[in-house]
Length: 369
Ligand code: OSB
Ligand code: MG
Image 1 (tube, helix red, strand yellow):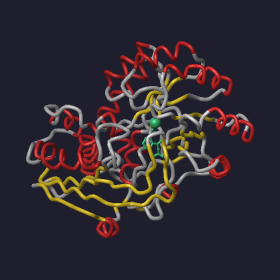
Image 2 (cartoon, helix red, strand yellow):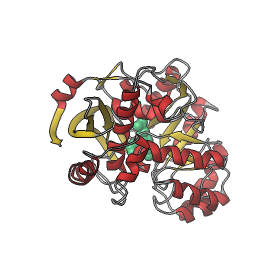
Image 3 (spheres, helix red, strand yellow):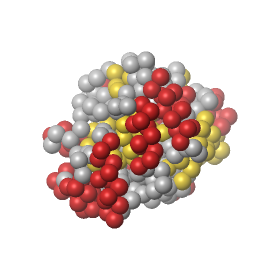
Image 4 (tube, helix red, strand yellow):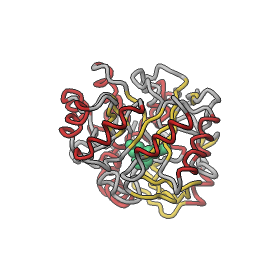
């Protein structure tokens, strides 16, 4: 392929319900979409998963916009690209900025799959047509509200419930969930809200038989996670700490985790996600696909990567309607009563992009040629 132009479009999408983590509350998303066009006229779409502020990681909507527009897109435009798997290497002179890179890299995978007329998930090497799904439920204004939400998601068939935890919203919350719903598949995600001095809390949480506890300690501290994992039974799952296949190797060797959450944005796109999946599979570490409150395009990419062999645990990939009044793809992502999503059979990401809707909610755009 040879990319003739890249268009960046920022859209504003209000969430159906606010999403609160230990680092803050999100009410509406500012999402950058990338449309990459091959000289044959074929298009591929990617979504930037950076947040509205640099809280989850250093990248955010504003930083990604400028890095993609001024640095990354010019590195790809006009180059003869043998395969989407080479796009990561074309951007290797830029350090970090993995979410910005993933925006273009995933778009190139969609483009390539469309040129080959195959579904992206098959093109990535996926082995399952149906992926197991869980939900991530943010911190609520009351425990009653949280229990109500869990009830709704269990009714819908989701295979596991993840709740966000933070100091003051942890032990008692998990206890109440266990009392009310018994032995459901349950896990907590702390988004780095704790330190090793909270070890007694984690020892007490062991009694609740959680599937895992996600990123309890600092985003950049594998050593402390290794120390914690040695003293608790609950498996630690790393999210923020794993930015590359090398990070995955180190974390596993250190004993910092027993499970890894893979996010395309955080690791730099599909090629890097595939490498992290392989590192984990070869070492017997199960993985699952995380979410970043994506719109339909990012969600479709998440579905595709979730079909790889190592993604054996239910991910945070769930139905469009949990997030948006109206998504930007058609059909919207739906979940079966078994709590699964069926990977689409049409070419590329496999969903139609609703460009008329995108045009209506676009807040800025730039064409790079
Ligand atoms: O830590 O997994 C996380 C959302 C934004 C930033 C970080 C995280 C999350 C989620 C939501 O947990 C997952 C989703 O439903 O998209
Ligand atoms: Mg997380």
